[in-house]
Image 1: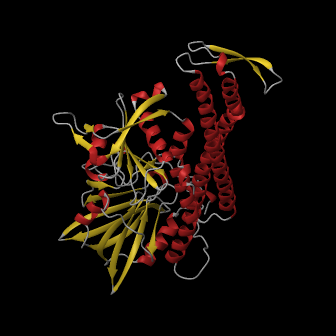
Image 2 (image 1 turned 135 degrees about the vertical axis):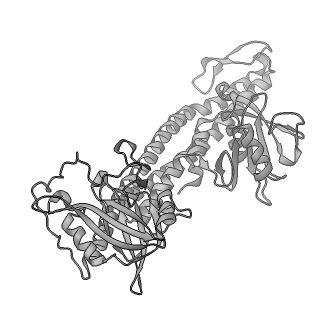
Length: 488
């Protein structure tokens, strides 16, 4: 046996498999197709039931008995349904491998299984040639009824005459040299049983490798995303470095109220915070002297709150980053399939807006609140009809076409400012006002929405609405999209 054939059956092994199976006389009780590249024949013979796997995987084509059947999809795929309609309940009359012509009649790795049902014979052909692997059901005359893989360019479609071994076929490496042997496999039992264990181990190893690569890729993407967000937040934190200057300017205006002339654009004053150096303080001409001082105090307050939020967000993202790095290291040292699958799924979930399994549109988290965004008239209407209740909250960008944003209200909880800002930012972000950067958002309880008669689907008229002025916060939108509020 050549190295290239180490994972597929050669013709001698196929002969041994068929000899051990002794398929003639078996009743076809059921056909299952658990995945896209294989199907299973459930057979009964001499008082015993057994199952035969036929795998048409390009890497691991094979036929052998299996002791444990995998889970099946709720609806049988096309080829399984077709076989059930044509061979279920039939009896296998013969099962043999085709032989080449010539002095040495070597097997061709094509198995012919004849099934008799209701006096009519059908032939199930199983070709185990790697990328050319296929299963084809024909009538007794060789006309194709259907194929597992429909290949029009090779004539393997319904109505065509089936050619099990095309004349253009060239022998695989090793076949031309006639180097075949039945492999020595560890363990007890028949060759079929050893093959089942061998291929299960091979596929499990391949699955683990794929899952490991997928999980690591998803975690790496999430890690890079977090690092990019941290870089942006740290840059923003630097912008808050001079926030105390706003308070100082407010104090300077307060100390020089007598010198402020309403309508003037600038105030020239001595800066007692910096050695009485002359400083020009910009004023708002429409405000009174005291209001101009208050404007700078308000800027200081907002900057201080903004810095606090950014610092908290940086701390949260840094903790997430450490968890992801630790998870990557743990998965690298112990690649458990279940852990790999969970890691890949959680990393993928963290990078995307949460897809809602039971509602249209997008779903986000603003713990402990859930936020739903309807991006189209149909999504808005369906959310209104099926997802939200009277005490839930509705947000919408005023004077701009855009999404309806709904906040689910847990019983007994009032709507906090942070969740209102989350919902307001989403309303502006998913509206035509996004490019403006700043927009008014009105909000109200869902029970205060009235459907507009004669208007397009989903159109509502709000009552008892309140206004919220929103300046788009990219960091907040990024946090909502990446799910950092739902830290793993």
